[in-house]
Amino acid sequence: MSLILNWLESMHADLKITDKCSRKRNYRSTCTVCTNVCKYEAISCNERTMEIDSQRCNSCGDCIIACPLSAIKGKAVTREFDHTCLIYSEAYTPTVKELLIYKKRGMNAIQIKHNPLNEQWDLVLVGTNRILLQLGEKPIEIVQKSNEEKLSRRALFSSIQTEGKQLARSLAPVSWQMEEDEWNLTNYYQEFQFYSVEMDKNKCTLCMACFSFCPQKVFTFLETAIQLHHEKCVNCTACTDICPEEAIRIRSNIKEKSDKVESLNTKKCRDCGQKFSSFQPEKEKCHICTNRDSEWLSPFE
Image (cartoon, rainbow, N blue to C red):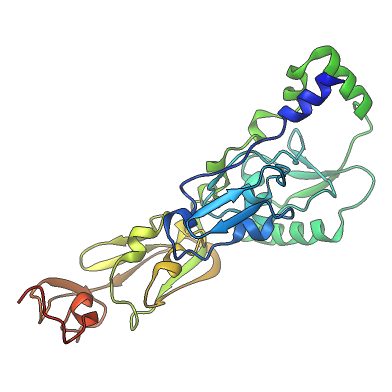
């Protein structure tokens, strides 16, 4: 019995929040995706720190999958596969993002045994197939489990005792043991975009904070223009959180990718004499001089 307990204990996958986490990169981050999906309240946010309580965490993997930046290291141990089928279980409900990624990795169907999908699974599957249609992909099907003999739970534990851990590992195909970097949806559908990034030209001062804090490199400065790579956006909200002017908006928009170019005006600041770029052709001062208190002495004087 001790061998079984040791094996089960070893299957607990410790999770780690990496430095890619937006809350570790930006103190103004409002991202709470992982805490929202955690049913066990195992994740806590404290300004720039994120902590996982190992006593509460059961390594279900929901937070790993949900994180828009794929910033949590670990494995979704509650998912089971049979060749190219995801085995249906009422113990959890997959997300649309999860099924879209599985689809690109070779999963073609959801396998059921006796009971049909419950309402939550059915809603996710319908939503996923609707998006797959937009992406030019075949829908995910529902298949019945074959009647060929399968190992019972008792037989499985018996085989573990006799054949050791190697058999247990072989039951989980390597192709489904995904690391944290593999949960970024944009890696799988590179010819499409899932979001559109909009900049309010009347508010934006081109302070370029969004350029620095965007982990997906959505923004590219071209001296006379800004190029927006919509297909890279994962809606991590890093740009909207850091923008002091609240000039950026992200909205869902699934379609073929399109890089948008926003033209800029390059001028010489009336106060400091430095070159600056602006969306407004009538603007005469850079954003630093514009925001500087008029009673302060200019460092250029």
